Amino acid sequence: GMVITNNEELYWNAKRFSDRGKPFNSTEPTNLFLGLNYRMTELQAAVGRVQLTKLADVKKKRQWVVGRLREGLSGLKAFRLWKIIDDADPNPWFVFVKFNRDYMRINKEETAKILGEYGLPVGAHYVVPIYNQYWIKNRVTYGTSQYPWSMPGAREIDYTNCCPNAERALADHMTLYLHEGWTEREINYTIEVFKKLEEEYSV
Picture 1 (cartoon, rainbow, N blue to C red):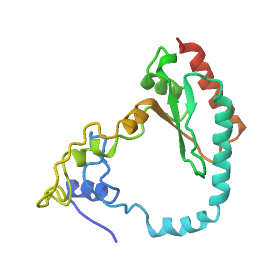
Picture 2 (picture 1 turned 135 degrees about the vertical axis):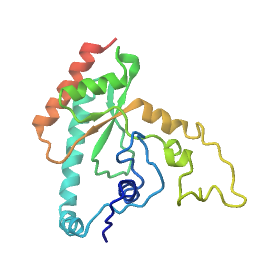
Picture 3 (picture 1 turned 135 degrees about the horizontal axis):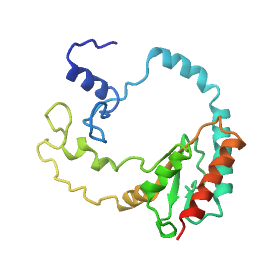
Picture 4 (picture 1 turned 90 degrees about the horizontal axis):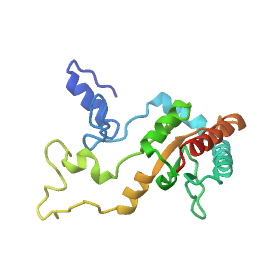
């Protein structure tokens, strides 16, 4: 279907709702309200069906890229790629890079900024735990209903520090985006830049 409106606020809210409440045209960094996941059009679905036939090769190439990066960064103290758990078979569209602040004179945000200046697709942060998102903290669900928190007999839950491991993991990791088009050239450059930063800014 299609939504047509001359009301700008309604337009932005419709766009947000169709993509899980994402904060388009907002200064708030987290999702604004509960929404659905209606991002895919019929044309994208048709292309997607063809792309699925390539999925095994894409996954194999991305896993190779990650393996080469892990190998190349293995000697560093300040940076380490995420551990893949036993029996997992991921198809990564990014990897988490553990940042060990004990070995660096600059913090994670400064590090990510410098890596970006070298052209690496790195983010200092991924997301916040879901209970720290705006829509959860303010109970923005189903209009103004605040459902399910407003249900009779609903429990009052204090989410503060309820997932310390998740919070610590997010605080200690950066995101490095990659894709199956990477070759030895991109991989080697990425490794060189991480090594250069550790040499220049290590304690």
